Image 1 (spheres, helix red, strand yellow):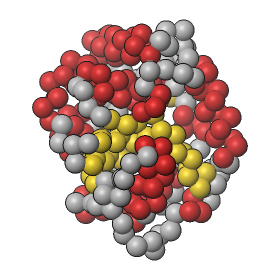
Image 2: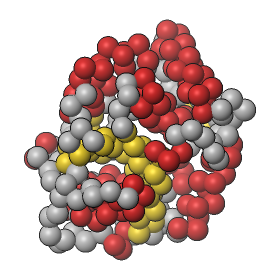
Image 3: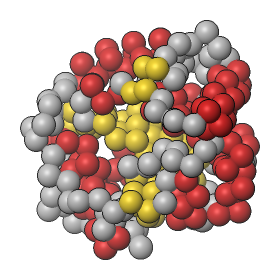
Length: 231
């Protein structure tokens, strides 16, 4: 599914659109600090101004990343109405990036809102499979507390372990947001440590593929020259 977005005026919608469309060099360099490879030519395929700043989910997020051959596997793994990705990027067939953006701590709390029993069962099965792989079986709050973080982790597991894709899950946490609710680096650090503790995710098999970016909004320059690739 392709979901057009308004031009973001505040919060995470504003900042992720600005990073992808106007500050790709900054975004790429932040990620490169974790991966230690040249990411200057990462192609950010979403959100793009010329594509109505659209976000993607379900089979369409695979398609825009060039991974459409895995659509049937995704349907078996997760019901329709899965994660709506704030940003999506790739570097040829070497790296694929799925991104969730947050600008304040209340945004990290979420519940599973699936209505049908069939969907709930599929979600629970995939969550349990992911938790078992990560050895996070003692973790709570995957369905009722931090469900959004949980389903993003499940999709990282899906891409890497089910599909064999070299995927990275990026959480972009924006600090000192003057447009909405300002959250400091220290506040983010404390909240995220607690979240991981409650989910039993302090250490797990996919930890190196989960990147937490704490980005000070004062670093984001609306007039910064375009770097990297966007097509």
